[in-house]
Length: 263
Image 1 (cartoon, rainbow, N blue to C red):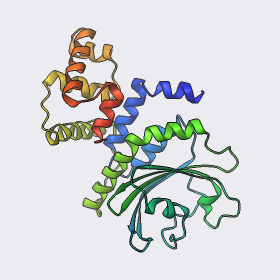
Image 2: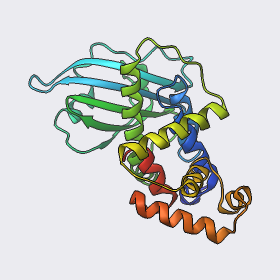
Image 3: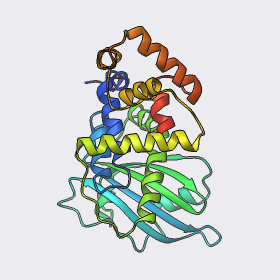
C-alpha cells in the first residue's frame, strides 16, 4: 500500500477506532504499544520510545529523562539509556525550541548507542522546561524515512504530541499505580469519561443525541451504523454531527479527534 493511499485511509472508521483506543489507553501501560500499532500501519517502524526530558535551559543541559513507555522489537536492545545524555543530538535541537519539532536522525553504524544504529524520527513538544519525545525507529537494513513519510508523521504529530503530554501528566499524578491493560469495553468507558471531561472543561453542552453521535464516530462507527443503532435516518446523524461540530469548533472526524486530546 502506498503512503498516499494510507493517508487517505486515515479518514476511515477503522483509523478512528484505533485512534479512540490510543486516546483511551493514555496513562496506561499499553499506551506505547497502541501508538506503535497505529503508526506502523501507515509508516513502517519496528520500535517506539516515549520519554519526557527535563532541561536546565540556563546551563544548556539535561536534568532528567523519564521513560514513559516503549514497544516493539526491544528484545535485542538494552533499555533506553537515561544517563550521559548531555551530548545527545536531540538535546541541542530541543534547548531553543518554541514550536513542536520533527527531528530526523539517520542510522550510524558506529554509534555508541544501540538505538543510534537505527533510522530515527523524533516528534518533540515543549511545556516549560519539559520536552515530551516520541521516537520512532526503523532498522538500518531498511531505507530511511522518506520526505512523504516525514510529512505524514509531522501531520500526525498534531494529535500524538498532545496525547503523550496527557500520558506524561497522568503518570506523574499516579507514579506508583499499577494498571492492567484495558480491554475493549474498559477502553470505551475510559474514552467516554475523557469525552465528558473535555466537555466540562470547555463548558460545552451537547444534546444526548449529539453526544452519542460524537462517541460513535470516535469509536470507529460509520454514519449508517450509528443511524441503525439509534433508529434514525443517515441525514439525522449528519445533522447531529454538524450541530456538535459547530459547538465544539471543529470540522469532521479529524477535528473531533484533535479536540479530544486538546490539540
